[in-house]
Length: 348
Image (cartoon, rainbow, N blue to C red; front, side):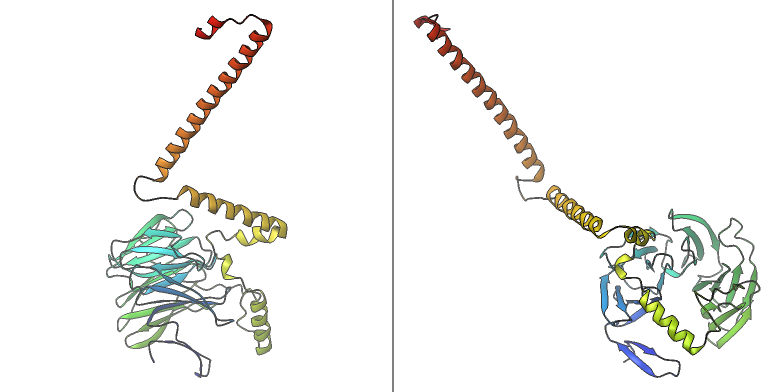
């Protein structure tokens, strides 16, 4: 029973049991796509559409067990941290990872991405926290911790909180060059399991072995509330209307790619242009398949190309010989008619 994924409401009543998500190690939800993403002990990455209940994709990462899973809110790409120190970027439309980055020399324990989708922060067993630019896939700096960072989170104003052991350290500007001066420190009674900032409030929630506690982090929350994006003071009717609007404006899973502007480009194209683009893509795939065609033994693709070139040269030479023979025959007939041809001319 405990190996499946269950969905509950506010009152604690069980609504759904997802048996396709078996032995799950990490869960994440894409709110704009209504996709529930999970990775299990065997390394299978599964996508489920919560609006229809259909399973969109089931991908084998072939990189073993992982506990680190998050997504980029800017483009919907899922980031998975593995035990060999690599981070892979996944889309439900491709069976292979879009990007594979070597971030640490050991297993990755925690990972977080900022709200703009430009920076990624990873924490590994090597007691280092590294900051990466997702646009160029280059490291911007690193922070050395006393013990491995088991959990991390970013606030709405980009304040970084790192939990390692019983200690929590916060940094005010993690994407700048000054990474050695922490903003605040806090010690808990037991080992920290998870931390998370409360939206629109300067509060950091901490889950540890002795229970739950919360601390104040000044300046961590966003003071200006965008009611169109998230309204913490909305009523029940406003919430229903917001859910219906989100379902109507749901982004399809086929549009998840590294280029977030692809949605705009496709929307500007007409139906005829889309058909022409699809035909060109199919022709490109066919030509690529022909180029990559291989056979066993001596009849390989390179040898076939060489033999075709030789045949073409032979045909060209034979064509020239035939042309010269025709020309000589015409001259011979012309001489016979004019009377300038003798019997001895055939020995020339």
